[in-house]
Image (cartoon, rainbow, N blue to C red; front, top):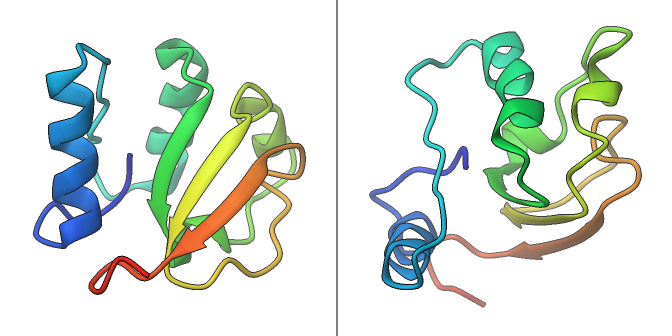
Length: 98
């Protein structure tokens, strides 16, 4: 999960996962390569992220790290991405939850 916990979407995601005993991974760094390298270790098929992480142009080989992610909820506009090419993507407004 790379979403601001101060927004309604980020906080609601954290609470929903905690209440339903789902594992939540919140990266301790803003380093994109470190975050993406943790995805296969976490073995999660869901990801909640902001539009900046979703639309980032990643170097070769990083799309293999995200192949296990099957569903992505994007806080903001979901543009095109190479990172999550095989995922079902849904975008929501992080502030208004629309």
